[in-house]
Image 1 (spheres, one colour):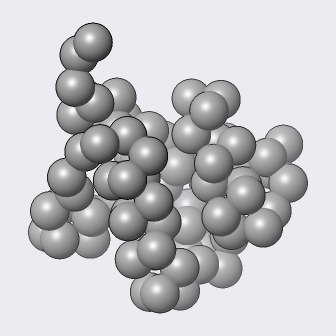
Image 2 (cartoon, one colour):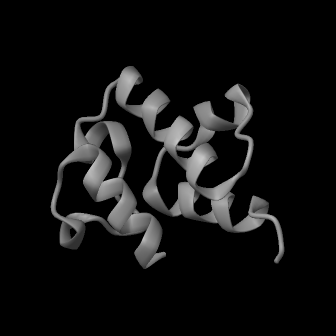
Amino acid sequence: MAKVREHLAAELEVDAAEIEETTRFRDDLDADSLDLYELVMELEDTYQIRVPEDEAARIETVGQAVDFVVAHVPAG
């Protein structure tokens, strides 16, 4: 969680201490569609995962993003 939180904080230019599992991208971090698209691309590149558009659209909180990454990161 900490690594993903730091990554999100850097991408959205907010203090990592402000980001919790329940933090909402749009409502709490003022992320717009472009921010969210770039965030998904960064997560895909960083963690070598694929986030389908329909699943990306359902990710609303930091906790959901972390859960998705954890569930899809290749073992190794």
